[in-house]
Image 1: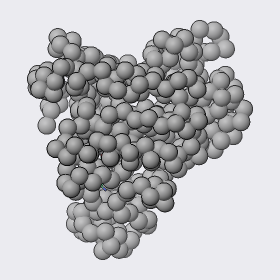
Image 2: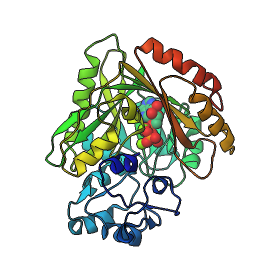
Image 3: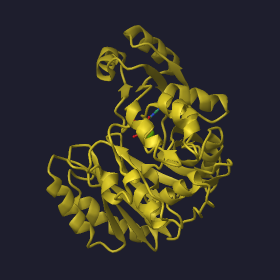
Length: 373
Ligand code: ATP
Ligand code: MG
Ligand code: MG
């Protein structure tokens, strides 16, 4: 999606990923030999150096990268690395990220460092209560790295499930809704935010996004945007950031985590906003004027297409059906294999009202591979 946006601005993109047919490489062909894509892992130092030697500005679409190498190449890339490697370093360890946010006065729920021992989990539960959210500090996504301890008898099971990864514990947050805000930050530190959205997760994976958030307390959207913008202001470097938050019954907002990149909760911006999160990411890292983050439709929803089985046909048949729904835009990612739990694409639905969005979404949810509940 970033590559598709770049091609509209005549910006050449060189991609580092495994395989000649990696999804982003299907979108943009190298325009000259020196712009050819790099075949390798984004964790491979030699490959990151090879990419850095080809580009004017380097950015990431995932936080689980080798930060030491990004720090090493930072000075050699003419327009730098965005967001700053120091930001990626802070964010990629969730415990360090939470400490950073707390130190800067951002609202986060209680959390503490723990060892991977039954005793340490018991101590955390004594302090933070049950249920207790255990999280892997590193390499987490789609909830892979989280374990909810509902009863102390699960402590051993939790350690086994989370393996040898460094852990920390979070107090359980009894939220009424999950919400998110995409924030864009320019090289000079100017920030601007997209509308607040509601995110609905299924099995820890983002399932649906509704834009904009509707809440009875009309002060929530402005407060959530203020919290999100303030959090991003504490970080270094340009680009878009996905800020995940919890909305409480009393209308207060807690930060869950920040992604230093375009975010799933902002996919809807492609069809629903004046400037997509991808285009604004490019504008930010290239020091171009930032674009308007306003909605250009009254209401939108985004439905993730998550693999339910190894059968790609289920996804393509669903996509064909989605093409018959007015206001629906289909995005398939070109991933080579379909797997259970893998994000294979998404559908954005726009309409003139929330009711119309929901009416258009209904048949899609009914036909979703793997069911909708
Ligand atoms: P992502 O794919 O968003 O990167 P992740 O693996 O980093 O996910 P988190 O965002 O930390 O995981 O948590 C996944 C989900 O678990 C959250 O969206 C939320 O539904 C729930 N969750 C996380 N922390 C808490 C908490 N402290 N209390 C209650 N629920 C929580
Ligand atoms: Mg995460
Ligand atoms: Mg998350």
